[in-house]
Image (cartoon, rainbow, N blue to C red; front, side, top):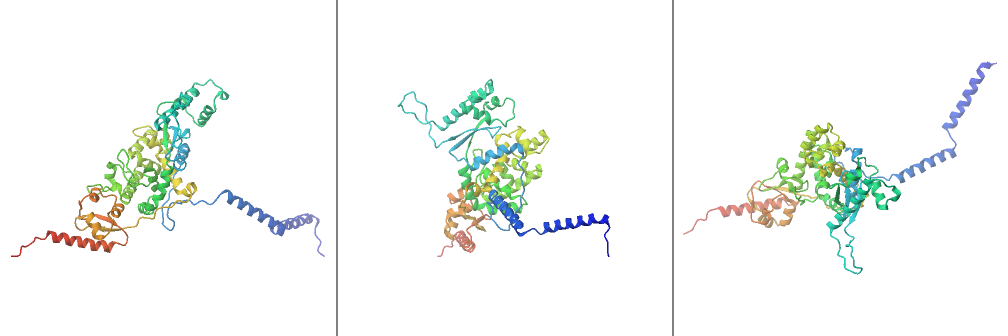
Length: 451
């Protein structure tokens, strides 16, 4: 008979009890398992309700396109600017004027709604009061808020003695760290009006369907992040006929001098106004900026202010941090528009890529399709249109980079000019051009008199 020694009893009992616990843990009762599973499913359902599935890019055409992406940084110091521009693009339209501080964009004093008519105060109870002009309303609001700021700057008050409007303005500056912030904000030039752009953004989403896929593919061919194409929303809102008061033109808003460096600009064509030609130029310009500055945020900022400004900023501040530069650099022509260009881009990128979340579904134009033909002889567009049975307006829509004189007169395009033509018309145009060439040859053949 095997007899267990006394000193072995307790270890064995412990092992038996511990094993039993492990077995019970490994194989819980069906009721316990069901309860745990129900709890897990409820938790997942709750998480799903709290975090709805959001498409990361609702603007680009779906499919296997091998697009290149880059996660553009948003410095903490620029978040107020980013949030401001998101409001401008997604909330306020052309009839809403946002009065704000130029240094601290989170300080929005008021929104002037031009849909609401405001009249001058009349001394006569029943006298006619004409509506205030847009300019008068703006200046009146600036004066009103400047008076409030001057009162806050003087100090010597308790908050309970302030009016509701004065309290609101006081707390607008809660996050502002600037010596004498109220007095500084009251200075001339510190208040600015920004017109809302929601209506333009909606139209830009619609128009983007016409060109965006090809534009993205062009940027991919240059090895560039597809997100860079959203600069168009900041520059032109996809209006190919956009012209600025300082001479910038087209989808990418090239200035003449910069355009000559990166585009075809001659007596026949202004490449700035052809969305495809201009896209190649923009890709080359951004590529050049990146090679010069070594940073995508700076390269984007340089698209507006020029690379030299950003090189100077890097040297003066000793950093390539866009947050530090945008907040502190004041050299050259680096003013409000330049300081905000990068955050405008980030805001446009956010709103465009998630436009369904901001606006709902938007019907977008179908993609532009075309073929190409090269003229072998000098040819008038009017003659080409008639011979090939294609409306002149169609040719103009496909070739907006050609100077208008070629559409409005009998001026002939030189041989070697390449035209975009409607899809499926290559044979039609080939025969038409052959017929035009034959007519031209016949007209040039000397006539021999027969006696």
